[in-house]
Image 1 (cartoon, rainbow, N blue to C red):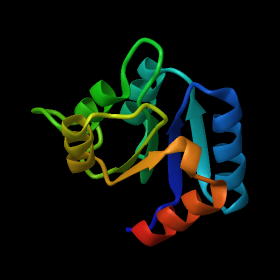
Image 2 (cartoon, rainbow, N blue to C red):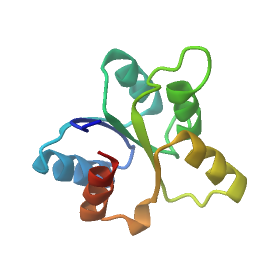
Image 3 (tube, rainbow, N blue to C red):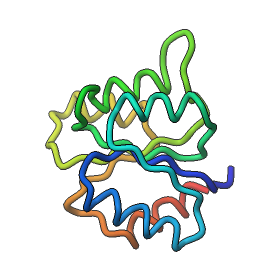
Image 4 (cartoon, one colour):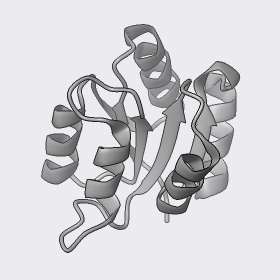
Length: 124
């Protein structure tokens, strides 16, 4: 599956702007929201090929968003690829559960825009 459209759910302005700029420069169509509820609404209203999902968000945790996207009787985006992004060090069980539901897991402090683009390229 080709990845063309990306939804970034990230509340950190600096990181969000960096990801959006890098992705747009690489030719992706990008939407960016800073709040978990807005992310759920965006994913419900428009199909995306990939969602970059921060875990520590205001109002709704990323893990809850991931569950709504991928699980339950009526998942919002069951076929959309999801990459979890966090600086929060998960315990092993939480990380394993998230990795099972997500297509990738990135530690923000370790990821550069180039590494992000490489990972997305490998997913296509």
